[in-house]
Image (cartoon, rainbow, N blue to C red; front, side, top):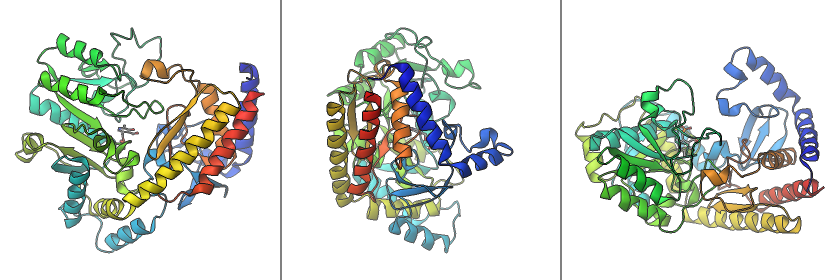
Length: 451
Ligand SMILES: Cc1ncc(COP(=O)(O)O)c(C=O)c1O
């Protein structure tokens, strides 16, 4: 293996290639700096060595401002399960644009979308919003409103959007996270009152005892817990057998509720998310990202008692653009024409191809790491041991993850930036040649870092 100094040289070399290929992105970044805060439209777009400015997408590919083509496995941070300009989405959106794009009154498509989500997720009542953040904010409010309790539990390393209650211990540094068994509540952004941070208790993923301790210490005060049923903002961390069912039982035994944040896992792991795969139906579920086929839409599903509480005005779940007709038309096409059983079969074959090809290269080049996949999502985890929780995730190698991202990018595969945190997304429009490019780039990377 390369020494850290040689690895730094390899990264510097790849970053130089990256920048050389993208002079127009650099020029746009310069212009943008004059009008956009940080020269980007979201802080997550501030990436090294420079943000990539895109021109367009088609099928499984995207094209940058310089005309470079990439197999798009970034998928807009997991929102492009449909790929780009999918004919069914284009048809549905075009038809709706011509019939009006906003009324703030319900349209029939909302019934079809909610019915299909109810069938897939096993939760009877649904509402819509516009982003994952709004969906998780609503479920946190709803858990509090229904139980009359203020405290919530989330896991360390879990990301659920950028509202106050969940911006706690998202990616704490090892030296501020506190002891594993009594983690500190570390604010993940400035601007959040400490009183609010104090209402969010922190547990460890895959650790029922850590939740039990919090429920015991705060008897009768915990409204519920929000958790990604497969963690997907720390690479991919699957739940251990029995963890999800155990969580539900444990929370319910304390009169507390369970929300699955399936914003990322949602349609990407399979037709009915982790909920359907695990057979554990939570009290509330949040969906967003891929649901809209590329349009901004989110959904909240819930049990009868919780959603009756909404229906009766017990909790004000509102929003001007909720159930927007354009978003509903796209979501209907997504569910009925794109995210079909046959699409999942195709994606499963591509998932296997990627996992087998990259695992073979890891073995051949004796790298420390493994491939972890969940349906259309996957990543390479550069760590000696399987990762079970955020503390294990801290051992994942940042430099190797970044170097891998650069090699993929320079080789024409766009993975999500933020190396070890994010995952690839195989879309309904990718094919074997796309996956073979991913594997070939991985082999080039592996050979380079073997030295
Ligand atoms: C698991 C999870 N929940 C919620 C969100 C927030 O979604 P949005 O960015 O649409 O607000 C994200 C975004 O990455 C997410 O990954």
